[in-house]
Amino acid sequence: MSKPNETFIRFEQRLKEVLGHSKRELNHDFPVLQSLIRSEGGVMSVKRLLSPRDRFSFGFKRLIDAGYPNYTLESVVLEFADTGIFNEEEIETAKWRLDNKLKAKE
Image 1 (cartoon, helix red, strand yellow):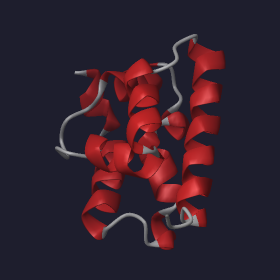
Image 2 (image 1 turned 30 degrees about the vertical axis):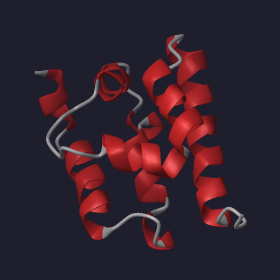
Image 3 (image 1 turned 180 degrees about the vertical axis):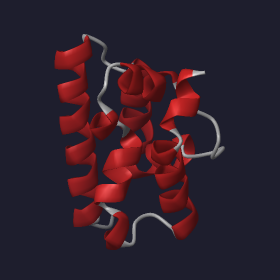
């Protein structure tokens, strides 16, 4: 069995940290994302949730409505944009969603 990539581990730790902040601020634990992280790991879960590009998840909308765009998984993706764990399309999707967050309120 191969040793998990340290960048993947750091990403998942950061994602869980952000989820903890979200839980404290919104009293919501984002159960779908938590379940995906347990079953697939943080990176693979986020890759799955970044498709399709123009679909805003319930969690994203909730965080944007509450004024916490920095707690979105998209924000965490951008923190790790230069690590190579996400491809250009995934990074662009994260940027697009954050740049177009007002559409999530419609």
